[in-house]
Length: 170
Image 1: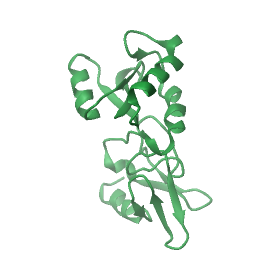
Image 2 (image 1 turned 90 degrees about the horizontal axis):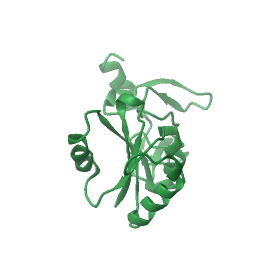
Image 3 (image 1 turned 45 degrees about the horizontal axis):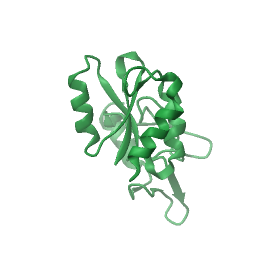
């Protein structure tokens, strides 16, 4: 079961709802959206069989910032450490626009740099997979000269996104 983090997009994703669901996160978000005039944005989630206990621990961690119910006066940078602590079980939601995969350059180690894969976080491929959002990160494999995510089993050299970016005019 996931413990999820939702923010109000119009308010720089603050406050943040920390909740859990036994079902689908997107369905839960749609149900919550019905009662909220501001657009809700999924920031991330943690997959765990101990969701009830984890949710309680996170609520306690941020108790001093609690607003109403499960809404906390936090900004996304406050929850990023919580997601990162979860490692392979932590996920950062990707931007809805897949043109966000456009490579805008390479760093000194020839690692691709992307245009906004994540709406609210600036992460590197070593920290977070741009395909599934898993905070296990992608790992470079010398034998294949490809990047690999243990979370979603994706293997790539990112060349398909250079081509995609050119097609979309970005």
